Image 1 (cartoon, rainbow, N blue to C red):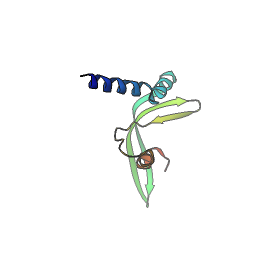
Image 2 (cartoon, rainbow, N blue to C red):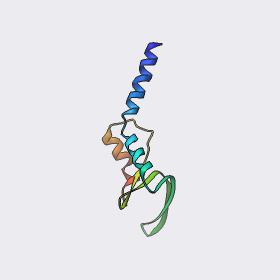
Image 3 (cartoon, rainbow, N blue to C red):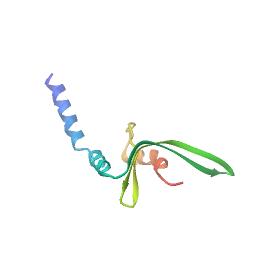
Image 4 (cartoon, rainbow, N blue to C red):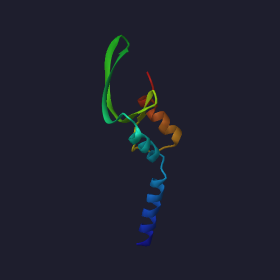
Length: 93
């Protein structure tokens, strides 16, 4: 039983020090914040019009711009592999 309790306490300690808490505090303090914000963008590809649509997990105003937060649950892989896997979702085309 103690092993389970120790594991749970380790998990709580790790989560309490995670960087996303800073992001969430900053978002709460923002004058404009949106969760699950829908979007659609028209793009030209090879002479054809395509519409890319989805939802932004969290977006909020920071100074003169916006900060987009894209939460991920699929975290198997190195930081470099994850950056490469999800880069297209957050870069300008």
